[in-house]
Image 1 (cartoon, rainbow, N blue to C red):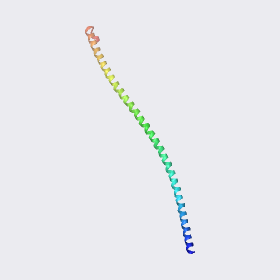
Image 2 (image 1 turned 30 degrees about the vertical axis):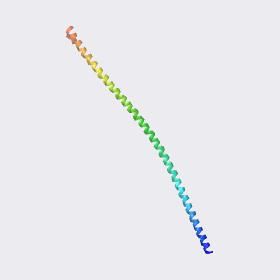
Image 3 (image 1 turned 180 degrees about the vertical axis):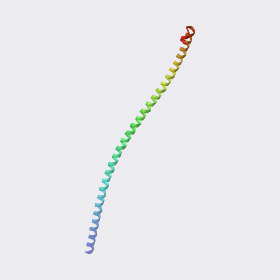
Image 4 (image 1 turned 90 degrees about the vertical axis):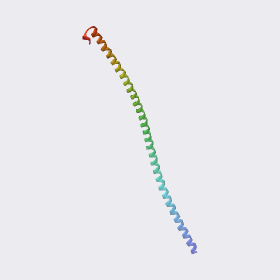
Length: 115
């Protein structure tokens, strides 16, 4: 009988230990579950921030492309305007030269007051 009582006491002790271990494991699981939910929320926030940053970056790239096109167009226009001005200066020099020739001719035929 003593052995049976001892065995029963050991089984009860083992059962109590197992129950305490199970309670501890459940508490740890609850704690880990809460931590997991917090981390999941943080991850969601980071993903949202990342999406916003990506969207802003895409907008900046689009703006840079737009500005590059505008600069290129402006450079082409400046080049074209410069060519037009050179042509116009050449035309004006030709006209000036012709005016000087006409004045010289008038001075020869009419008098020096046209020179």
